[in-house]
Image (cartoon, rainbow, N blue to C red; front, top):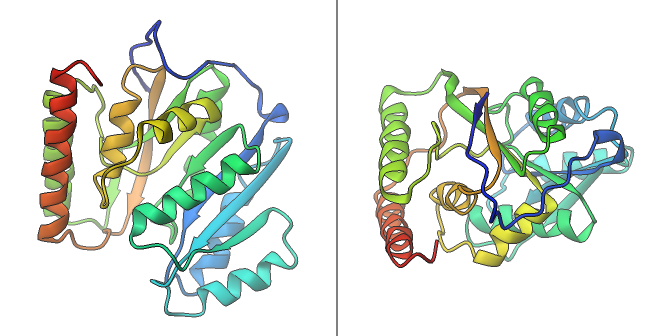
Amino acid sequence: MQKGIPSENAAAQRTSLKRNAVHLGIVCPMANEGDKAVRFCQAVLQQTSGFQKAVFFAVFDRANKDESLDQMRALEQTEPRLRVIWAPEDRCVVDAYLRGYKEALDAGCEWILEIDAGFSHQPEDIPQFFDAMEEGMDCVFGSRFIGHFEHSSFKRRVISWGGTKLANLLLGTRQTDMTSGFELFSRDTLNMVLGRGIHSRAHFFQTEIKTYCRKLKFVEVPITYRSASPRLGLSAVKEAFRQLWRLFQLRLKEQL
């Protein structure tokens, strides 16, 4: 594990909870997962034993074109730990995550785990997030650079590595992986992040979240990432630089 530096002025209130007293929410946007949707949900829920309550929030929107939504709705009829969210108003993947966060917070979840579908993130990596949170962390972040990349192009690794180095330099963060989306938050931490506002409309929003958490008590844990995510388009890259510059300006004004 790689630990962050605690801050006396942390915005989130630290409360050390044991999982048997915790209502856990798992936020997972889904689209076009095929037969992996049900298998992935079941594999994730298998890792949640010992919690007072655990709920898997599967968020679908109009990006889904296959039978994944119908399959998950069928599973919902027999799996009380599953909630399928239909969000046709979503305009981008960030909206899907934000909808999932809102659903988990509205349901009273004390810990909120964010994970990508399709087995790009591995369910068996989940327990270490819970172990770290029980030690009193505000948030726990998965890192591919202290873990493993599998079936991902060299170009994508370089982009993630370069983005991490640049963000650390400009934003004062100290993480090994600023672009991963496998993370666990306390309720107070996620409320703080959402209170700051998520301005990015593309993949950079993961870096934005980590930047807001940089003064909190956090730890990075090794994860295995399999299969490359969708190709980054030029518009997403431009958006990342715009948001990076915005956050850098806030840091210069001591507003970050």
